[in-house]
Length: 359
Image (cartoon, rainbow, N blue to C red; front, side, top):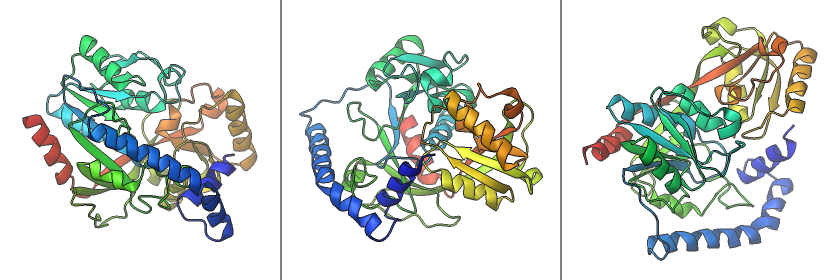
């Protein structure tokens, strides 16, 4: 499962050496240069206001990245949402709704009290934010300005969080937060399709703050064009049974044989941390990011679980919102690992947020 995406990512990050790593980049480089040129022209047109960005009646904070794949946007968005909610703000997240059956439509996922759509309709990330951050309003829509205006009409938020919004230049933002993977912040340096970059790396200069994610503890954040920086990492806090019940600490799972699977941007660090925590990972199944978990995939997971002799299966909380159709005898053995965001020194981030609130 997912062998070609795994191969392509090893090329795009620059981790694959030799001819098998260099040749695909060489072949794709002309297309990458054209793509980079188009993205640069687009950015300039917005900077010169030849293309006009729309503004919402409330402040907008964008959280995004410059590469394809996971950099941990959802935990960072949740951290910022909780920070703002704790200070009395009514917060609405504007999400594209990627991977949901209603992608392309504009709809309210949660009004802060009631979740109106399920993960299959709105996508995994909007549903996860709505279900794990009490009081958070979530609105989905490809046109984030239209989604914001729907939120203004029906929910009256005080502030917006633009999820995965770094390239969404059609909407003005008051604060731009850029997330970079500290190990390979710009992949192999090439834009799509030869690399991971969604736009040339000089576009990072638009950011008001850069947060390096997946950093080792004590990792000094590298300065970037004079921008405020933070370093952060994601740690597995505990796990909750898919079928319901109290959380379980990983100390209580040590030595247990587990099947690990995940449909996230970077599954290997997740599998590695499970091993670090003392779990006996007998089989891993990496799936594409935002995996839909079709009936065939679910049946395949159950078959693999029985065949590998595992005691339990474990996946991420993000994957868990799409596993409600699992057969009960397998679902009872599945645990959902919950991520915890650790920021070494959040002051650069919280200072910017506090200054925005004061305005």
